Image (cartoon, rainbow, N blue to C red; front, side, top):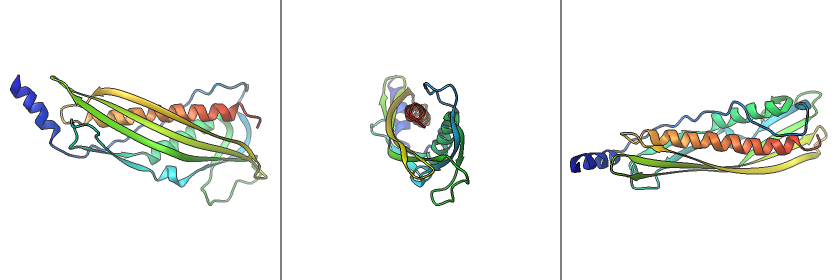
Length: 201
């Protein structure tokens, strides 16, 4: 038994990087008083600070502390915003921050990331290493009409966690970080789009 415990401990001290590729959110549940999607043709503008974000998560506990967890966040977060917005708006076509708006458009939707943090902590028990990952996301969305008048300006935050075992080489801990990211992304987008959908647009 002593040998087994020492073996588990030594595994946690052999460091390497476990890349995390979190899943995007394909759909959201938006509670609204509307009978249908928000009508009209909108420009969808996702700030560059969302598209370019990356994160290297370091373990905050002693167990698995030799490992790092680089997480590619920009693409899944951007795709999640696209999917969620198009589930609430009749037509939302993406343009770049500096790109020309669509002709004959009803307005524009702007997304900006205000906060993003992921924490990962593991505890060594006798038989396994148990981990908890928590992701916090804060996001702002502004909807303007075609004259530039602000119709909606709202922000939302979400904090979601995932728990499980680290795996024999602490590789599964990264999966928990990805799971908590996807959960937090879904929740923050649902909160934002619920407020937008129930506004007078």
